[in-house]
Amino acid sequence: MEPQQTSMQAVLAFTEDLPKLRYDTGDILITEGPASGVLYILVEGAVEVLRGDVRVSLVDEPGAVFGEISALLGSAHSATVRAIEPSVVHRIEDAESFLQLRLGIVFHVARILARRLIDATTYLADIKHQFADRTDHLGMVDEVLEALVNQQQSAAPTGSALKSDPRL
Image 1: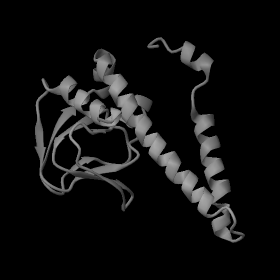
Image 2 (image 1 turned 90 degrees about the horizontal axis):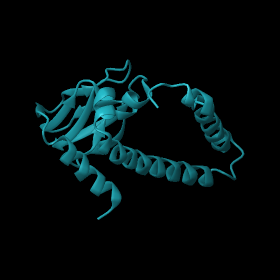
Image 3 (image 1 turned 180 degrees about the vertical axis):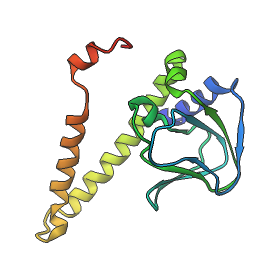
Image 4 (image 1 turned 60 degrees about the vertical axis):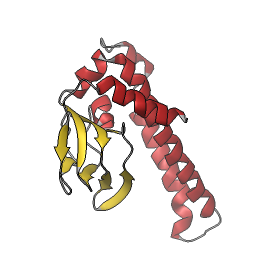
């Protein structure tokens, strides 16, 4: 069994004591925009993840986590999550506190995020390779991707910022 599947099963095990909520087809779990502090764990069903009106992914694997990026970074939600069939989830109202109190789950959430990052960077590298020889506007993909990488690096906290955070 792959580490991501094992981690999703572990996430379900760490949250089996939590109440479950049901969402109907079309219900919005998370709205792209301001942070809500809420974390969701998919128990059953399927949801779509949207950036604007573009579907980024369809997720139907029990143990999938939503809202964790916003909770971990204290930032706005980067996407909308909408049920595409009746779905059951654990809804955790104070995600930051939950993750601080249940450290065992954090490893598995990190593993899930790491898999997503690998998938995204592999996709970006493929795009970069496909358009490397272009001289038109599509040839700028290389520059756009480089700018995104540099933006990510400049947004990351420095070591001294991490040391000064009393929670760490």
